[in-house]
Structure formats: structure tokens, C-alpha cells
Amino acid sequence: MPSAQEAQRIGSALVTQLDDYLVPRLARLDAPLLVVVGGSTGAGKSTLVNSLVRAPVSTAGVLRPTTRSPVLVSNPADLPWFQQGQLLPGLVRTREPSNEATALQVVSAPALGAGLAFLDAPDIDSVVDRNRKLAAQLLAAADLWLFVTTAARYADAVPWELLTTARLRGTVIALVLDRVPPEAAAEIATHLQDMLNVRDLGGAPLFVLPETRLDGQGLIGEDVIGPLHDWFGRLAADSNARSAVVRQTLDGAIASLGPAVAGLADAADEQARAAKALGDRVTAAYRTGRQTMADGLRDGRLLRGEVLARWQEFVGTGEFLKTLENKVGQLRDRFVSALTGRPLPGRNLQAALESQLVTLLRGIAADAAEQAYAAWQAHPAGAALLEPGLQRPADDLPQRADRLVRDWQQWVLGLVRAEGAEKRVVARGAAYAVNGAGLAVMIAVFTSTAFIPTGLEVAAGAGSAVAAQKVLEAIFGDQAIRTLATQAREDLLLRTGKLFDEEAARFTDRLAAVGLDEEPGTRLREAAAAVETARTELALTGSTT
View 1 (cartoon, rainbow, N blue to C red):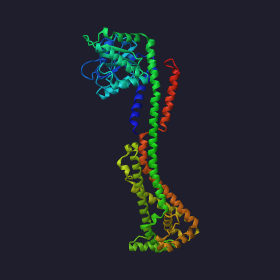
View 2 (cartoon, rainbow, N blue to C red):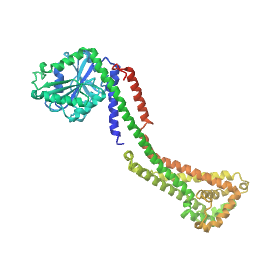
View 3 (cartoon, rainbow, N blue to C red):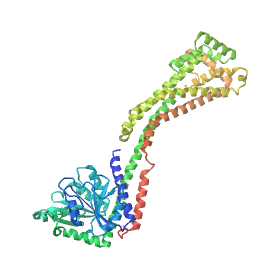
């Protein structure tokens, strides 16, 4: 569906945030506070991190992008928590810089106060796709996001989209406006503050750093970075302040699950509706096929052409009556047939019936496959599930249809044999009429007026046919022969229905392979409601609202 790609992206992002941040942070509310330093390309994030910890721990340079793998800097006392991997478990810890997308370099900095760590993230607008994705993942794992921008880049669209997402998620945000020309500092800072106010971010701390020369280690002078350094120093020293930041971000992240999951539930419902619609279209196509089959057994279409000719031959030559006489007559006919090399007329009729039925089945299956294929092709989800072979019946359909008709004919003969066994006339020699009676029952299946064809098209054989019917009624009884025809028709429709089900399964199996749950939207909404109830009870921010 058109909504699937975006829903999958959101769903994956939620699962990642649960694994990377929410679950491990809920398990350890007292763990060190993680500040993720993110921003635009060339904003000076690495230089800022190095300057805050007073050591060149993260590579800074002119070439872009500089930060390829993220760098996490913490006090030595906090290092075990970050090395254990509960937070961001999908990233492999390393002590050296790496170009691997799943690597996280963890280093210690004694100058950084305990209880606080910085994570230098890749550029949020990097030309490298994996860097952008990793940056977004890391920002979702932040207790506090330190957004770094410059006088030249602060109005760019991408950062503001992420800032808005962070606000909606409840993440605590602080901003650094870096490399600002002194003469424009007031004007740019005012404009940036106005932009923050418009987006409900006016309460976020804003630090303006003027253009300056770096010292011999590539660090910003303490006289320039002092206010920001002091702000983080106070945060590191105040466990209550750190806890408040963690709880605010955590509470906001949990609260944001509700709307996000509601959107996923709507998308999941749309998936379920699409699957049902596609299933209904297949059902309709093959239901039409079943109806066509039933109509074909009622309207006499199967009694035309070769079948009609063989029926008239069968009745008109007296073969039908002769098979009802006695064993001697049957043996005589078989002997004559063997001498002349010609098949018995009854054999011709049985073959014609088989051929006509198989042709009908193949035509109906072809029409149903084409109808189902066209119905899916017209649906945005169905078109993606199709493959060319579905436009026609399965390759082995002719063989299965042949087998079905032969099995049905044998079943009819068995039915007639079982019915005739109860008649006294059978004991007097009419048991050998089973084949002739079975053919008559098969013919009866193909008309709704009577089991013998009537009308102008069969006038030539009608007289003999009526005589044959009278003999059958004398053996089986009028109601019995009609009951046999009804049973034979129902059994044939049951067999052909199963055949069409097998053909329809070529479509529906592709739906099943998608793996949609029943009522997935309902389950998602119930889960989100349970989480919201737990969040309210937990009262991370000291409020129940």
C-alpha cells in the first residue's frame, strides 16, 4: 500500500528507540545522563565536544564528513555503564576510531564530571546516507540533545525538522550557535530565538559562541566556551537536575509512543482492509467460476456437439436398451466390437462426456484466473503481489481436470451399482446395465428439465431416449433415478469447487505469505493504551497528566 513504506519506517524507528533507549533507561533511571551532540555538516560538533572535555578525543578536520563513527566520551567512573551495551545495544563498542556503521568508539575523559557523557554524532544532513540514519538513531537515544549550528546554517530545513521531532518526543534540548561574527551576534541570536519561539522551543537554553582561534590542541578557549562548560558542570554536579532531565525526556518519549502507534494502527488497519479486499476479489472471481459451472450443468450446454451426437448414437442404435437386457447381449457386443475394431457407442459417449467436462473446467479456470489477475492489477497492493503466471491457470490444471472427471465418472458408476444392488431385477440379470445406467445418470446431470435431453436439438433420439428412461425407471424407480442424478450433480460441483479452491489458493497463498495478523490495529491500540496507563501511574515528572 502507498502508506506501507512510511509506516514501516516509523515502526522500525519505534522499535529501535525501545531497544536503544526506553527499555535500558527505564531499567536504570540513575544511569549517567547522555548528551548527544548533533547538528549540521561543519558546525564544529567534534571541536565543541573536545573543548568541553578539554581533550582531543573526537577527530575534527576540514574534510567532510569528519565524524564517521560516533564517539562517546564519559568520566572513567561511568565507562562501565556505556561499555556494557544496555544503551544502544546494536552498536559494537570499540576503543579506536572506525568506519564501520555499527561501531561506537567509547573513550574516557577525566576532566568531564561523573554522571554526564557526551556522544559526538554524525552530521544530520550528511551526504552519506548511513550517517544520516545513524544520527537520527542516536538523537532518539539522547537524554539531552545539544544541537549545534552556525550563523550560516541555523535556518536550514533539515535541522528544524529534527528539532520539531525532538520537541514532540519530549527530548530536552539545548542549542549552540557557533562561529558567529561578533558584529552580527545580536541580530542572528535574536532571529534564532524568534524561530525557536514560533516552534514552541523558546525555553531551550541557547549559547552563542563567537568566531575565535583554536589553541594548540584544536580546542576553543575557556574564555569563549566557559558559559556552556559551566552549565554542563552544574548539571553534572547536581544529581537532582540530571534526574529531572532524564525523567522529562523519558516521560516525553513514552508519551509520544501513543500518537505514533495510533498512526501505525491506522496503517495496519489499512493493510488488513487491503488484504481482505484482495481476498474478496479472488473469491468473487472463482465464485463466478462455480456459478458458471452450475449453470453449465443446468442449461444443457454440455449436451451439444459431440456429446449430443454420441448420446443419440447410444440411444438410437439401441445400445442403451441392449445393455439392460442380459449378460449374453453384453458379451455379444464386446465380441463384435473386438472383431470390427470399433469402440462401443457407450465408450464413445463416456469419452465425449469427459472431454466436454474437461474443456468446460479449463475454460472456467482460465476466465477466473484472468478475472482475479485483472482485479489485483487494478489495486495498488495487488499489483505488487502479482507474477505473470497467475494470469492463467496452473500448468498442471489439464491433468488435474482429467483426473477429476475420470474419478467422478467412476464414482457415478459405483453409485449406480450400489443403488441397483437393492433391486430384485438385478438379481435376474440386469447387473450388467450398470454402465448404461451410469451414462444415463451422467446425462441427467447436464439438464435441469429431465435427465433425458428434450427439445428440437435432440428430436432425432427422443423416442428411444424415452423408452430407455422407462426401462431405467422400471429398474430403479422414477424418484430413485432423479435422486441419483441429484447426488451425481452435487458431487461433481463439490469436486470442481475444490479444484477452483486450489486455483484460487495461488492468489490467496501470496496474501498469506505477507504474514498479516488478524486485527493488528486493535492489538497495537491496546498495547499503546496499556503503556500510557503505566506512564501515568509511574508519574516520572511528578505529574499524573
